[in-house]
Image (cartoon, rainbow over all chains, first blue to last red; front, side, top):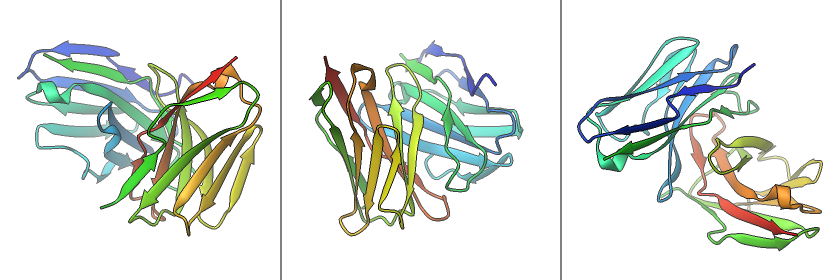
Length: 115
Length: 112
């Protein structure tokens, strides 16, 4: 298996533009997580899905952020409009399920820079 | 408020020594605790999980302890090697796995 796949790996955009980050989880994994990592705030859980259904989106910073999981093999995180403070590395992770014994497998991340 | 703290300063250890990293938490009752390794430019990689009713877990040169009274987990790397140099993150999970909170990480450097 190729592991969790994220695209793009790097994104540079201007303030106000829409940004869409993409994630393909490991085949057979039922849970998918979106994280944001910055020097100041560390790794923050934004939202997670189980069986394609959003379970907890309390970490989503504001209405400008939205996430979807239309099927078991694809998820998107959208920021509209983007702001400079959204600059961070965004990670997608997947696991077999939500059970505590299931380790999360992280993707390589998307480094987002909003100018 | 709920808080997780890891060694705020980077840890520099001589090769061959044991490295010990700390994860402290407040106002939180985790049922499970995980440790991850993160290398620059990469996503975290899972290392170990320990349950609240377990005091210690080992995997090769790694050892994790979990003291719910002290609200602390310790992560040990014995016979440390330069290849162990990375940032190590602890993550707390509630019993329902409904909340997952990561610490800010500790940067570990092993010098030859």
